[in-house]
Image (tube, rainbow, N blue to C red; front, side):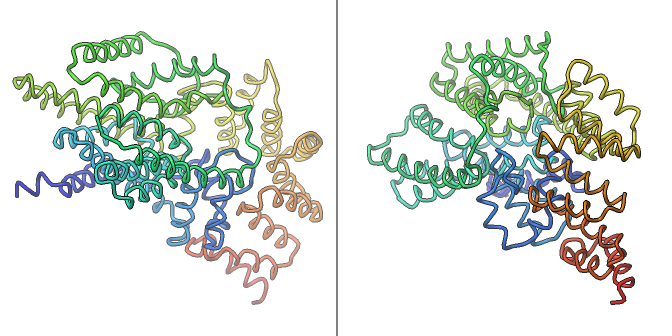
Length: 551
């Protein structure tokens, strides 16, 4: 019995029970408009077709060649789930929970592989499994890119260490085979080569010249495949989105201040944050943590180079986030950087228990209290993602800046709160007016029933920009006006830009139904029966069209 309690499988069961209990309610949460729906709901017609699965590795995240984001492993995971189970939002949420369990378990296996204390590693992994700062990794479906990267990185690192220890080439092959999907999950994984080099130094591994050459060769091969696939998907990356050096330093300072505070003193955690305002609590927490690090380094409570390695890991995997000009503070991005913090805590805890045994019972009591508080906080943090309503309201309340207000105005329009939307638009545009503002004014006019005014605005915008939303809404307007030729014209323009968007199927069906061509409308709607066949509204609509068409 004692052997089972101390076993790896027992710890996996504990993770399943704890994480499953904490996040099980998220199975019934909605998908979010911001990322989930463009990647899943609006693209069901495309991702549900198994023939399109290989194409995803040569397309951006929109499946439309419109984005600079490249996450093929993430997008293919959505595709596989849709192919196997159809459109069921519960499936995507269940997958996230399973992936989070697997991520935390693999992090533990990595700690064991580098010979950190097993029992302390279990305790720390369990603690961070319920940390509220990582709640969004589980409940926000599209953030699984971080988990996928972590899973494949841990598998890659474990095989790298096995290769260093045994010199077996199969481990080096597995290292590169796992590294490639890590890169295809998120480009941040490219930092692995620097981490591995620092790791070999910090943990005193003896590496031969041949092993160094093989590691560079296999790493380069995986990276080359990634670069080729990415270049095919995004042949012209937009460098304008990258920050200048002064902005990078400012982003780093702001991010580290708030990230450090929320890691060690997780009070209120924002859903979406753009502007960081330095507070006394941030200064206190950051100063305290810096003092602890310096003290541990100077006193050699933990070997100096291991302390530096833990800090290096944390900063290196956060660094890409500092380089984005319009920075978003998103806490799910902490998943991989936090591994460095977890290593430091394990090493420091081991030192304290070995040298101050009297502290053991106090540390156990403190641990239980923190575990309970973290779990309690995470339970309420996940509620912010229950519905699109909860998410949008919280994101706007967290940071009422220009970008947040754009998203919130869109939400207000969708919910029919036109007065609030107009107030927010007026407030945001008093100093400047962008094409996105004009689009929102047009959407507001359209939603309020001012069809002619909305049409005029969209046609004016069409002269200066190419945007699928313009074509979508003009097709809707001309359908209302029963100008079917123009409705088809703008639908075709939309399909050329967003050919994989399922909305086009339903719009085409509506046009033919309005024209009285029920047979054609039925054929178009039935083309997505494999996706929506179980949906009651869809089945009733299809049956009504079949009856009207006399089929």
